[in-house]
Structure formats: C-alpha cells, structure tokens
Image 1 (tube, rainbow, N blue to C red):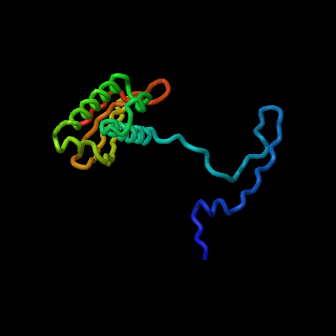
Image 2 (cartoon, one colour):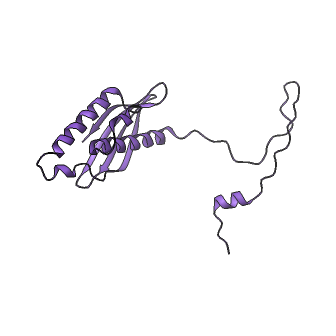
Image 3 (cartoon, one colour):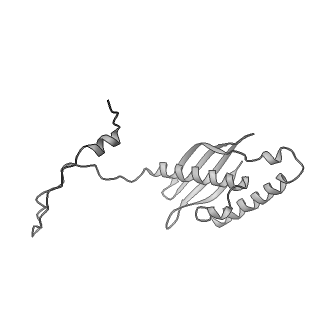
Length: 160
C-alpha cells in the first residue's frame, strides 16, 4: 500500500479543464464560471503578521548583540534611532565580551525566541513582547511597530 498525503492526493487527481468563457455584450454576467477549484487566497491575519515580524526582528536583534549578524541588515525594519541604539549596545557588548570577565563571553549565545504576543494600540500601531531564551538567561523584549508607507517599522525596541 502506498501512503498518499493530502498534497500528493491533490497532485494525483486530475483537474478538469475550465469551461471556455465567451464575451457577452451588455451588462450580463459571463455564461460560464469555474465552479470547482480552490477558494481565493485570503489576506493573512494582521495580528499573526505582526507576531511574525516581531519574532524575526527580535531574533535578528539578539544576533546583532551576539555579533553573529551585522546591524545594517535591520535597517529596513528598524527606525534610524532604534538602529543606532542597537549598534551602540552591540559595540558595548563586544567591548565587555573582550574583557577579562569569564561570563561576558557567554552573553547572547544560542538565542531563540520562545513566544511573542502582540497588542493592537490603534489602526496603525501595535505593541509586542517577546521572550528570548539564551544559554545562560532568559530575556524579555518589548517593541512598538508602526505602519509605514510600505511596511511595518519598529520604532521602539527595548531588550531586557
């Protein structure tokens, strides 16, 4: 017996061709419409989108602090003030890590974002919080996202 998953089953079943459409003059609807087929794609829930953006931004910011990612990769997502503050904190972290403290070198190792929660403040503003687990500690991160002309931008980023 051969196992068939939902995707394989959909690929295995032949799809009947769509009926031909004809141009009808006037205001009448087309004579034939495609009856069978997948439903049209829906826009992703905005809160889920905000959580996904927050998760990836927080992960990248912690990697910047760890020194494994350049800060300029976040320039499209972060406000210029947030980016400058993150670069400054990353420089301070590198300077502390190069010092004589034995635990300073373990800061920001193996970070992973455990959970993200988002709260809508207004139509164009969300605030989110995230829990980040590292090798030796757990951190809280808070961020504020505002809708820009092209995409969501993080205007406040606080890493605990």
